[in-house]
Image (cartoon, rainbow, N blue to C red; front, top):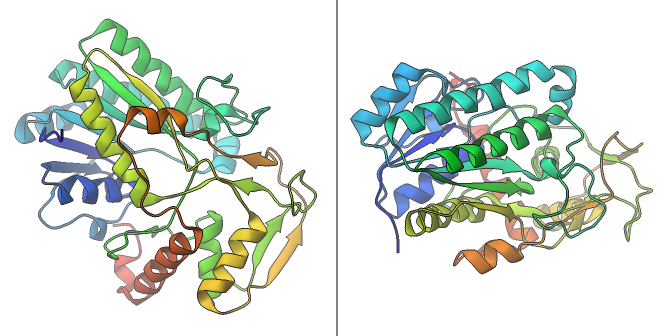
Amino acid sequence: MSTSLPVLVTGGAGYIGSHAVLALRDRGTPVAVIDNLSTGFRFAIPDDVAFYEGDVADEALLARIFAEQQIGAVMHFAGSIIVPESVEDPLKYYHNNTAKSRALIEAVVKAGVPHMIFSSTAATYGIPAVSPVSEDIPKQPINPYGWSKLMTEQMLADTAFAHPFNYCALRYFNVAGADPQGRSGQSTAGATHLIKVAVEAALGMRPSVGVFGTDYATPDGTGVRDYIHVSDLAQAHVLALDALVEQPESSLTMNCGYGRGFSVFEVLDAVDRVTGGTLTRVLGPRRAGDPDSLVSDPGRIKATLPWVPRHADLDEIVAHALAWERKLADLPQNHQSAA
């Protein structure tokens, strides 16, 4: 089954949100976007997608969008995502991620929109004592970013108990790559994601790649993470929406990852393989709060949804990220800055 309910994508001009827009549009689902363009990019939204520039906490604007577009579901990506910044400016994260999500959920309930997909994070687990990580282990965030997302999950659970409404919270692991057709990718300047940093370095946009910690309890001493291709992640959102429509009394919380980890050195080796070059690696001390290994247990999502990852090869993820970085470098300069 595939639903044709019109979907509002919040943060649809951003990295993951723009890929969800493409996934919905590719299968013929009507879609609209709200984004304040503080970190998103207008060029990331296809011309035939209804776009509203504004804030997800703007109650009047949301009511207008819900009415004009006859919205039947919301995919909520809008928010702040930089972990160190959340430690330095926690109130920004509790405002952008938690308070504004509360306002959005209230508008959704008032409008009678019955379904919501929420962009959550593996940061809700903190530093888990076990790996791979299942959804049922204790949630102990170690930074305001993780807490801000976990609080929103709790608000969704309480709302679903009190109202005719269901939701799916998807906890992402490390999202990487770009649309295989080159329509979107990670466009934010100064991003901290390892694969984006590494492909920028491979293209001469950075002098080197920092490796933070080589003494972890992992095979090569560097941190191990579960990298998921952004297009596979977008497809998980689409299938999760179908599941919510089919089972309106049930809500879902699921990890989004492949269940396979790669170390920092393995990722950098993949970039060297794909580019035929050699990255300059600058070894440094660990960063506070980085676990040795963070790998998902994807058993629940695979048992619940007909989700079959299509881009799980690390070299393919790197190749798509590299192709997008090259395309981004060729865009007019005014396209590369948020409007």
